[in-house]
Amino acid sequence: MFSTKFGIEIEFTGITRSEAAKVAAEYLGGTVTSASDYYDTKKVTSPDGRVWKFMSDGSISCQTKQGRQKVSANREYSVELVSPILTYREDIATLQGLVRKLRKAGAFANASCGIHVHLDGASHTPRSIRNFVNIIASKNDLFYKALRIAPERMSYCKKMDGLLVDKMNRRKPKTMREIEEIWYEGYSESQDRHYHSSRYHFLNLHSFFTGNRTVELRGFNSELHAGKIRSYIVLALALNHQAHTQKCASAKKPQTENEKFAMRTYLNRIGFIGDEFANCREHLTAHLNGSAAWRFRAA
Image (spheres, rainbow, N blue to C red):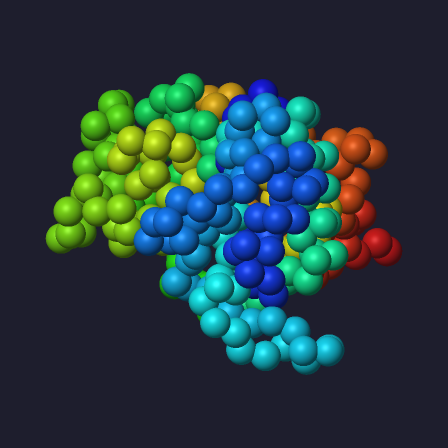
């Protein structure tokens, strides 16, 4: 589960891109360069040669703090951290440490900010991609409530398209080309467009079909909370592992009479077992109704 490579994009405001890059350079022991591109990218190259980017993003509502009050700010305060390729065991502590440093420097996320996790798609097959679609479709309602996706962000991370899920399971595609055709069916815009409308879903396969070969999960509100970010990454890796290893997956919705129990048992089933993931389980069930211990009320 933890061998899959991933990248993460964390949107925030509160400090400028230049300030964020300086914090990262000091923490990582790296150097800062400016790309002078459309996104005003600041690149931090760490001693191992990897590059951490701090870019502008037009969807972010820019703010900063004056005392305890949050006020509007200019576009310098639009910041999207784009990580290099990471692995969980080797890099999670570094990522969490950087998040804590940025938060201490004044960075914060508001309702316009999101987190996107990109998973290496090199080993995916038509079966595992179809599994992924069904897993997300099945758990959409539970995930959206557990993650409390901000209404302001819903247009950027929609639930799985029911028609797409139905076509995927009715046609049972056997090749990536067939899955690609189903994914883009119904859209009039060019498939080559970077900001293609199909990308704005919890599960984004546009990034998989247009050269990056990554499966993107977009359904996370941004946080400058290291523990919550870790829980989102672990969830993404676990879902990816389930899609790979499960023989088949159904889009059928789970029971919902006890949301917290449903989520806890599901998390245990996909690998959130033991003390190492206790905090992750807590973060991902905190906003659900019911009891984590009992499906039905004890007599």
